[in-house]
Amino acid sequence: MRANQKLYDSNNKQVALFPLSGFHISQRDDETYSHNPNVYYATDYLGWDSSGRVYRAPCYAPVDIKLIWKNATECCAVWESLEKVHLANGMIDYLTILVYHDNDIQDGTYYSVGTIKRMGEIFNRTGTGGQVTGDHVHLETGYGRYATSSSSAYGTAEYKFHITDWTKPKRLHNYNALFINDTSPYQSPGNYNWISFSGGSPSPGGNRKHRFKWVLYANKLRDK
Image (tube, rainbow, N blue to C red; front, side, top):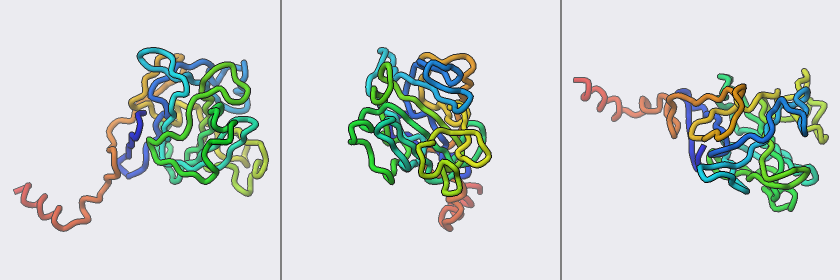
């Protein structure tokens, strides 16, 4: 996606978009160098454009999101959508997104818990904070709301997306959560089945036009 980009489906649900404008995958979600695919799906992305590597690449809010948890030691942050949104697998549900390695998290200059970022605004950057071998963003996605009070993970550092019966969000591959509209995948493995959202509008649409009598009258005249 691009800066300040917005997209809504025909039911006025925000369409979840991939947060980088271009990327090169450095570690897949089925690799085990520093990931555990038996517990969570995580992919490492380098910022990339037509000229090559982009350091401290901006990550744009895929939908309207709120920062609900962060950990400076682990250099990670968890954001949750404000409303249910349109996910790439067709689900309409909350999107929860976890990011690692933005240096601002480690330095204490990142956003405060409770901060809201609107779709298309910068909410994160690739970086070298925490345990890392180079500038990138570690990205995990899930559906549902994060660590509710009834969850065993509530109030603990158990922040990854476990696939138990009691913990939400449920984990999703990034390509099952996020549409890739206006993002360039300069390097992506064949099993990452990215799709773009067809149609939609950059602003809420739906049936709003039918609320105003003058629009109905204009439509009537046009149809004559």
